[in-house]
Image (cartoon, rainbow, N blue to C red; front, side, top):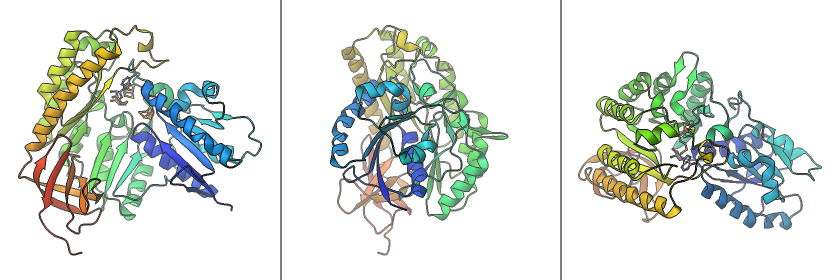
Length: 439
Ligand code: SAH
Ligand code: SF4
Ligand code: F3S
């Protein structure tokens, strides 16, 4: 079989990173190797995100750069996959007529066949959403490392009024538990130490009797896997079973990303998030009571249509009260096709920017304070590899998902090293290993 090479550039969330591994896994049996750069690749794919306008603008710009590779060698295929492909479908060809391929998230199975079609003079568009597609039988081609991403459910049924995801990823569906547990056992055999379960509402997972909590408990019994994480859980689906799994399984890391979006009930209601701020706050209390040393992070949107000054204050005050370990904070971006798209925006970009800066400043302070409380303490670091900035240092994560860097002590990736924290900022803990390893 002739070998061809494929280069994939990935945008957006972890689900897309996992989908890129899935696409590579689908293409591998058809003789495709992964190329590290677009130069020399036979197939160039952008696996895209549609969550905010800015994400899409970046991708359009990048396509402009990449089109030159089509002139380099006849037959080079340039394609767009993922959420933006699903969002704009054929209309993308007006903006980028040079595209050969437009493929939505449920159409990856067709990719080898589409690439094999010889007379592809016309661009090929495949954007049918499929409520049964879970790719449960496909082995993703994962990169090396200590952490493996495992998609446990696809799609979303929540339809928050601002969000494009349900339209581009389709209906919620779960991968059978037996397939997942087999996959994790195989990952443990391959030497992975950590699995991260993925889904847009990951804790809505269900396969018959197996709910998300049960899936976590079953996963925790697999030898070789040291840590289990997951993202993103939805507050409304954080039930007793899932909390119990976090509280009782040592391997399930004490870290939860719990997207809030806004703290005013008026805004939450118009977002149709499905919880009130009182319910969310009660959930945080329950989680903190059940899970010692729990780290919490969140997502916040500022400038949702109709967000008044006191709505924004409510979000600011709530963040100050809860004290998240970290937060992903965004300016509202109107997405065509969502319900909120029809609602007039009531804030200018500059006003949204000001509100964003205010909460970023608040959060930076809180994150730094929380991390400095760890000074002098010892944290257990799962080593991932060399630190990015400091030569001969190692980097990894502690159970709370904080990045920890320390001078190299001979430990290899995948080893658990106790590190004493000597300094900290809002994003990183710096320390020294408590023991040396034979080199
Ligand atoms: N399923 C997750 C969120 C996935 S999208 C959940 O429900 O929590 C990741 C984050 O992007 C969201 O939490 C939200 O904060 C942000 N986001 C989504 N749509 C957005 C929009 N139209 N404008 C700005 N931010 C948005
Ligand atoms: Fe989007 Fe809401 Fe679904 Fe999250 S739960 S993916 S924010 S619709
Ligand atoms: Fe973006 Fe799609 Fe993820 S819209 S955030 S890549 S699910």
